[in-house]
Length: 126
Image 1 (cartoon, helix red, strand yellow):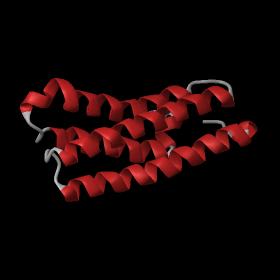
Image 2: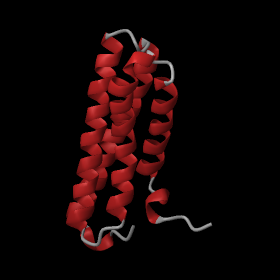
Image 3: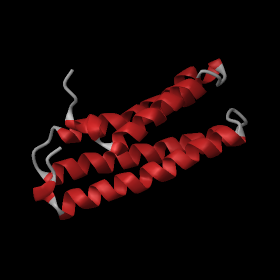
Image 4: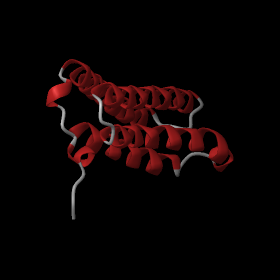
């Protein structure tokens, strides 16, 4: 089976794992949050990987960087929703800390990717 360029990126692999964690954790959230926090968190998490994938299909480095920036924005949205979830007692502190660590790693990797896209557009062939 063909592996597409975005699937080879370490940042996409980490983000994909993060999405899986979000989906599993939100299964334990209160059902009355199904259309609010749960939905928002799942959509934001999935948007991280979706934007990395969509950006890989763009031609210019500037377009690729724009989608990487949108991934970063979705990551920050996840952080915000997780902060609220933890404060409201829907998310245990240890789970929050684990996800927060993933967010820190992803933030660094997305920032690094974006910088590379803007500073070295000729070497990016993903």
